[in-house]
Length: 344
Ligand SMILES: Nc1ncnc2c1ncn2[C@@H]1O[C@H](COP(=O)(O)OP(=O)(O)O)[C@@H](O)[C@H]1O
Ligand SMILES: [Mg+2]
Image (cartoon, helix red, strand yellow):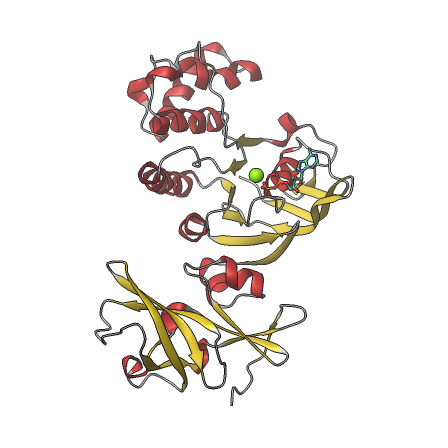
């Protein structure tokens, strides 16, 4: 096991600042997720940690040692990419054994190591098959077993589940998390999927434009976003953001409820809501519309759990409210979080 750290790491491709000064530091055995939209620099950052890409500036440390000059194989890292390639002509056993052979592991030790890695992912029964005889999920597990068989100190995963369909993904996510908890290998996991990030990460580093905008536990980044980017990227639907003089006021759809549904929980700010559309999602109702009064025509969304029985119809005005503790304020110019301000 080892920690991973980057210090002001950068990668510029000509004019493109793919990674633009990132400071990250994992804890021992941590599951850290890098989350951000396509093109924000996640893969480039991971490749620099692995030693597959040379940084323009800054340092990579593994286990507290600067590894800038170490080639990938000397970094004791295993990496699994989105497009993991199994060797099609080899059996599952041979695929998993391959990195051991390349590493010069004694022949007699190979079967037991392969059996160990296969057991971790429940693929002991597939060892004699060829990749084309496996389902997508099984191939994924073989790729993970192959990456782990060398018992790396650090595990780097770049959108490893994105080739699986939604149902398999949820199951694979669950397996991956259980497995990581069991072996306790420090893991950095890249995804653009916020649901995946929230479910998997001990902490999430939210990236945009080559920078880390915020790093924290899933609850911290969700409840206390550091800027409007993080506020808007997490949550489905995302946080409502309303312009007001020099700031933006944000509140989550699930905190914007009919006034009577709040009962007596804390101080409330009441907003007049003109409803245009109601969408039934089973457990929730999404209510679309615009505010009136002090924020005329600001478009907002409310997410009401099915336990809120208040009937809501399009074309009608309602008194909705947000608890004051759930109002977040951001500077309009910088997008950064600021302290609470009175709304009146
Ligand atoms: N080899 C390369 N040459 C030029 N530009 C690159 C190269 N690799 C990545 N980029 C650019 O760097 C940025 C970050 O890319 P990447 O790290 O792949 O993002 P992500 O994995 O978050 O989608 C993008 O603008 C991408 O086009
Ligand atoms: Mg990528």
